[in-house]
Each structure stands twice: as structure tokens, then as C-alpha cells.
Length: 228
Image 1 (tube, helix red, strand yellow):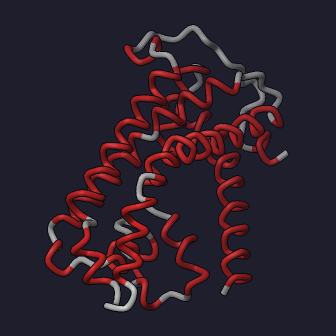
Image 2 (tube, rainbow, N blue to C red):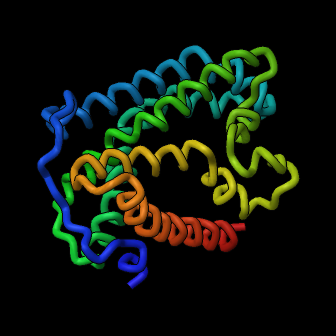
């Protein structure tokens, strides 16, 4: 019902749209390309930013040897999990929007949403690049704690990490400007597929993905409270 409220009654998808260069790129190629970019960024982070010096500065003399040994032995697992994490990250909003369209009596294929969300991932790639650039400017005093508590353009950056209780860290860092651009780009890409105006697409994406994101934040917050 909530999704129908946001839609016009006469809205029907129209697939006769202008062709763009990326329209003919297979989803598999896009996924592999984005995965490769994240792998390169992860390598740059491990080798040139969050190197051994940062770990030595972050941990005590009693634990640093064990930490470095673990980093050397199991650091490769970070690269293995990147494609898995990316697939789950793309599938979640795509599934949320699919559910939204089903509740709105629209018949759109899941792969349409998956591709749109995959293309919109460029927002978070840019966010990761900016993140690494900022960390690289403070290498002399950089620690693991500082790198984990850096959330630019997020709600938590307004209040400061030290002024927010632990269980609110993840929700407030997730509410950021990049997430806004992410939703806008997905809506624009889908508006080209359906051929309504941008606002109509936004009125579908925002409540469907927003509801899914809210449920995810509630789950993570609940688990954080249980662990702490």
C-alpha cells in the first residue's frame, strides 16, 4: 500500500528508451570491472596507507607481533571477500526495489534493478577514493582507530564519533550524502528504463530501498546492543 501512495495511477513502464553506451555492457562485465576497482583500492590501502607502521602505532608492544602475523597470514582473505560482499551489497537494494514494484503491480525484471544499482556503485567508489586520499594526507599520525572513525559527509561527522554512543555509530555513519546521491542515481537510471519522469522513479526507489535500509539499520543496531 505504501508504494502505491507514492505512484501515479496511470504509471506504466515503457522500455522504448534512447540507447546509452553502457546499456549494451553485460552485467557480468560491469560486476567484474567494479570488483577489480575495489581490489585495486584495497591493495593501495593495504600497501601504501594502512601499512605495518600504522598497525605498530595502533597496538601495544605486547600484541603488535600477533597482529602483524595475523595480517601477513590472513590478509589475503580481505580480497576474497570483496566480490562476495559486493554481490550482497548490490543484491540488497535491487531486491528491495523489486519488492516495491511488485507491491505496486509493476512487472520489471530483477536484473534491470541489479544493473542500475551496479552502475550507481560508482558513488561509493568515489567515496572510497576520497577516503583514501584523505587518509594519505595524515600518514604521520594515522592509526587504525582514526581510519575506522573517519566518516566524511555523514550525520555522525556533525556530532563527532566521541560524542555518540556506540550503538548509534553505524546508523549515523550510514546516513550520509553519498547515500543520497546513490538513491538519486538509481532513480535516474531506472527512469530511463521505465520512461516516466525522474520524480516518479524516485517515488518508487525511495520508499522501497528506504524501508529496506531502515530495517537493516534496526537489525544492526539491535545486534550491537546485544553484543555490547
